[in-house]
Image (cartoon, rainbow, N blue to C red; front, side):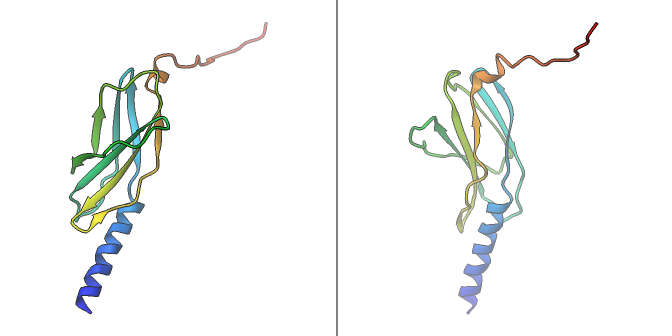
Length: 120
């Protein structure tokens, strides 16, 4: 019974990891993108950041350790990327965070913002 309880407790922790991951892009310039996410309670070994370029296959995750920010460099400015995050510990890996889609060059030519219109 103790073994079953321990496995259920670990499963509960993994489920909590799934529910508490929120990935936010905080900066995107030309070929770099920076992310920040909320931390989760221990036991935490680290986070995995996944990247998919357009519709291509997902590349192997980047293991980040116990950090809550990361900057990727060298992205192609004319491509679209999809990113998601998982947390992991000795019991396994959580489910995915919400997927974030970024086109690095979209910040180079932002749409104009109308500040004021007046009629005379």
